[in-house]
Length: 292
Image 1 (tube, rainbow, N blue to C red):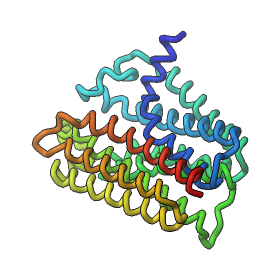
Image 2: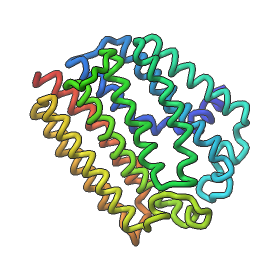
Image 3: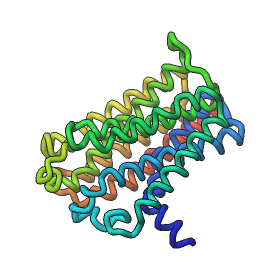
Image 4: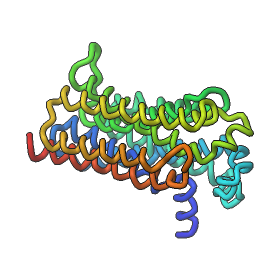
């Protein structure tokens, strides 16, 4: 039983949840201006787990043949035959149950918007076969996290936009550019394979150097959007310190990976970005609870 659960956890790369679940809780804390109700935090976490697990399972299912031919991914659970298609579909259905039931428990707006997540999750894997924008669609998939956390608390999205709506959009695009930036770095590992198999990753289309430049620009845009969030919500000194820490981490990430040396890509991808995500949550929550 535990062996199967570990297999399923590896299949959806559960450990990478640390990249974006802090942003879901970040949206909830910012929307509440303090500590959200425990029930809201529980359902937000479960909804995010369902959304991400279903998206990962779908991506692995759609990319099964591509992954089987790639030496780096051939030993993954599905192409290696460690997990069956029946089990994959079971994971997808259970994950969607978590997502939609959690959205139902939160509020009507969350339930109404929940189908957006499966739609973009299905679109994402196919884009890499045609256009070099899949990194940004992946980023938007994770960018829904803070928006979902925010809407879980207030359940309202006004048009024309007010402060809350502007803040949500700033967070959405900040996470989008952050994820796109580090996913471009991650895709450098498959540079030769993508070219050979005519897959449209940014490195395969534009080359390694330009890909690194675009990754850096994406991360600069992320920081600019977070500065905008700070100004819109009038966040305090602790948040500002957090921005400096995050900027330093981003800079460090880009010193690790060079066009002529890609050996540090795994460190830059996992360790540094986990630190970025957790720093964002910790400094923001501290600012809300201490400064305000």
